[in-house]
Length: 506
Image (cartoon, rainbow, N blue to C red):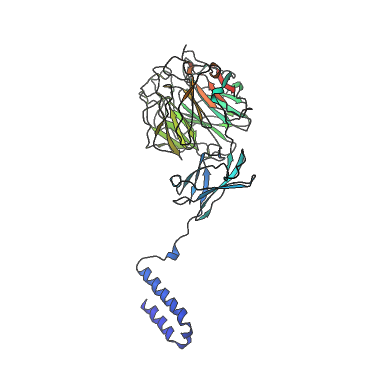
């Protein structure tokens, strides 16, 4: 350093360099400061890296995300930084652009929870329609991802009326079902397993679902399950709810009871099969390497924003579990690694129901007692309802909300656009005393008080437990949702049913 200073001073003493005194002197000052800082182990502020440009990886962990307005979506990516920037929604067809600043609590460097606006405050987006979504921070503007805006269907559940679809080829209880969307007017329902009165089955049935909610015929799949199973979990993945490719669909059978003589037994096996949209057929079943962390009979299972969630279920000794597990759906239809949540359910529970809505996971009813006979009625269940945040497989703290009127277990639950119907099952009081009850999800994620659906014309009069249920992915001709109830066991006579009900009104 001393040599450099001496050389610079000699340059300043040269008459040929005097005209550069100030500029060189300025350089001298900079040089001294720079060398001093380096010698002290510091760094220059001029070397500070610029903030990263944000990048969106996906929305809702889905290939083709969709959402109603005024509900939150999950933006996954990188470079969002630690404090909120803004999210820009643009609809080219209407020329409307809306900019939203999410709350700090919903913003991290890799994820953003933001509510889809109705418009820009002056004009509303066209529904149904498509918006492009981008993230803006001090680092710049991200790539854009399309989100399909779907129209929220308005309906009065007090006006539901019921009729029958084609009966199942076999009377079953403890079966499970899933609906698979194909187009705006085409969908299928697949059922798996169940108990037929003699033993558990490996049967798989497929029915074509039309927009009215009806299935006119069922076919028996040649690709049966690898083993007999009942009281299991079942979900389906498509490009609208996970990251599988457009045009693909996969079905999953999770846990359950293998042999009806088990008390209650259980398995950790997880099976999946592809579903062919063109032929409406189920492919061969594969045993996935990502098996359940523990054997579970009667778990509550749902798929929400790219993740499968499993809540409760009976251990092999008949005690109910309070464990909560999640696993991502991979792009190839396999499942990732299961994660056990640090937020256990508030009680051990089995034969409850679960669904995801607006960034929350809801669990209703179930049985908090030990049990070794999944096909038995036993005592009534519980009327507890709890919800928790569910973001990228991470489940938050559980919060209690409005309890159902009846203490139900082995029931079914339908959710459509925030309106919830809890139905059937084993409950306190005589069978049929309150077959259906309803609530709705409030803006703060709580549930409103429950009300009974009591009119004779608004009840299917099925009075079954351990039935299967789906919500049709198709919009009916009257722009209202369609619900389906499949099989189950009579709470009055004990007879196992092959009857299929669906609502044809409103």
